Length: 293
Image (cartoon, rainbow, N blue to C red; front, side, top):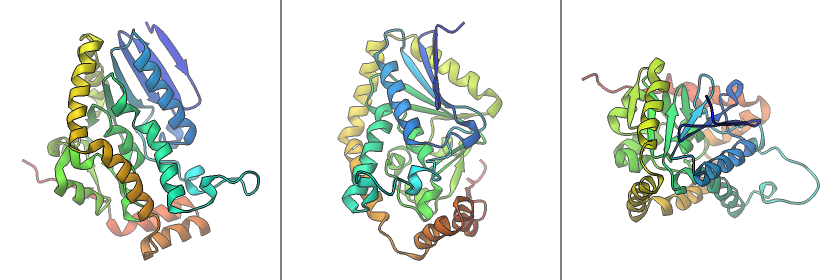
C-alpha cells in the first residue's frame, strides 16, 4: 500500500518503500512539457530529495509515452499577451532567448544536481525535450521499442540541454543531432545512450526492481556515489556545457535558413501538425538501425 500520494494537473507523486515515483501525467498530450509541468517537476524532485523516507527516485511518463518534447502549441510557440508589462519572452533578442532557456534549465537540471539518484523509465516517445529529462537522470532504462531522439534539430535549434556526447561520444552525438533521427531503446542501449533496454511489457517491473535495489543502500552513501560521478562529469565540462548549450540554441534560433524559415511559416499559417509533417517528411521514418549482431 502507498505510504504517500499527491497528484497535480501535470504530475503524480507517489512514495513507497523508500522510492519516490514521479510520473508525468499528461498522457493525452504525450506528456509534452509546459512551464507548469516543468515547475511542478522541479518542485517534486526537490521534495523527494528533501524527504528522509526517500532513497531513490523514478521519473516516468503516464500512458504510451515518456515525453514527446516541449508543448509547441502554448508558450513555446511564442504565444503571449499582446499588452500589459513587457517581458523578455516578447522581445526576441538573443540575450532574452538565453535568459528564457536558462530559466528552463534551472528546473530540468534538478535531476543532475539533487543528491538522490534518479532512474528514468522510458517507453514510447522520448523526443526533443524528453531527452532533456531522460539524459540528465542517473540511469535510463528503456523499452526495446522506445523512440529516442531530437527531431527538432532538423529545423528548430540544437538541444538547449545536451548530454549526448557524454553518453555516446562525439561521432554518435553528431550522427543523431545532425539528422534529428531517432533510435530504438534496444539500439540506444547498444551505443550507451541508455543503460539498458527490456521488452516493453517488462519495463515497469525492471525499473521497480532496480529502484528497490538502489533504495536498499543508505541515502548518504547513494549521495556520495552520485556526487563523485557527477563531479567527474563536471570536471569533463558537463555542467558548463549546459550553459553553453543554451547559448548555442539561442544562436541557432537566429537562423534564417530555408528549413527553419519554412517551419516558422508553417506554424504561423497552418499550425503545428503541418509544420512537423513538412519538417520530418524528407527524412522518411527517421530511424537509425544498427546492424544486427
